Image (cartoon, rainbow, N blue to C red):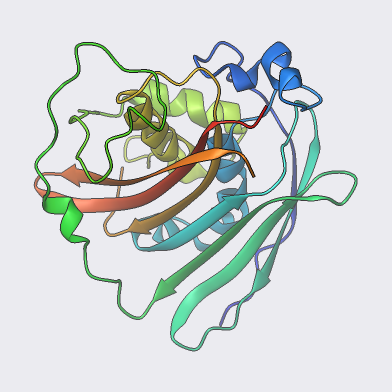
Length: 252
């Protein structure tokens, strides 16, 4: 039964003001026509998962699929309302669409989540050999993007204190992110996809537009786009696949 989670409200927080990505600064964001600095897409993604984790607990983070798209910007101190509806898919369970609205009722972001009867096969890209480490990151452009070429390997061992910081930023009250056997917060997971992208290119101002995630195991208009396939390995097993999309050059 796909009973939708209860609605949730949260104040948006821009915790990326000091980021290399200057779209999170007022000055640069206004240069591109935004009213102020943008709240990060990974932060919005974290908000969208909160009502779902409250309803389904840790099973939501063990297996399933998520497809998130960011439609309009969220700004510091926007009061966001998160509402979920059931998709009613017969071939899957936990099928919902969760939307984030601002106080004006504008749809800012949408997350579709579901657990299919069988997860899709792991992409053959997961077996690709990593690219060479870069001594200097090139500034991203249509000339420096190397299509279909693997990026360098990025090692990541989540630390409890770093995860706790991300949970605090999210103001997430779920107990599964606390204690000895705490789970890594989805916000932290997707932020590492941004880290992998920034490990490949110097990106002065860019906008996260969408991500599609496949969770396979318990895990503790003038714009120019880049889409990356990313895979998380743990002890030689694929635990997470992400199709990550961003605008790396905004139209003037």
